Image 1 (cartoon, rainbow, N blue to C red):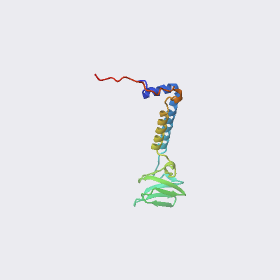
Image 2: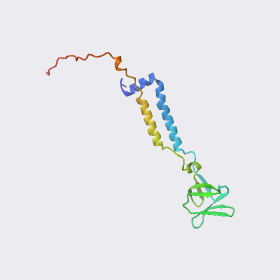
Image 3: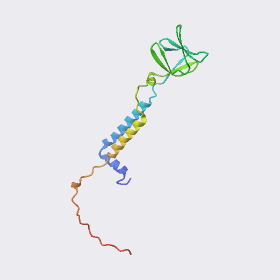
Length: 165
């Protein structure tokens, strides 16, 4: 590592001001945590089989002979076309992710809510990279002002011209 190289300057500055290294590390940790929170993965969809309750006693009944979804509660029967994405039972809307003759996959409330606003993780990475780059770019030693240097002579020195041999 040569003196004056960028790595040398970085190590020199961090030895003199160790708190400067905490700023980019803190930003990297926050960026990683924000990305993981946006990706999610905690809650998945809920799977119901034939005969299980979907909402307030409404049971999933599978498919009928025409391929319609069947929901039953006592004597009441609700038929839905096979491609339906949501059903309203007892005033509650349930979103359907997929349906087979034996199982019904429901979306969870967090996945089903279309009004939630999420910033794409690429935006968080770009923002964090820009802030880290700015913070690392600011880690250079301060240059003294022009008034700190004595005035240099305005007359250039005379050097004899050397002839090629």
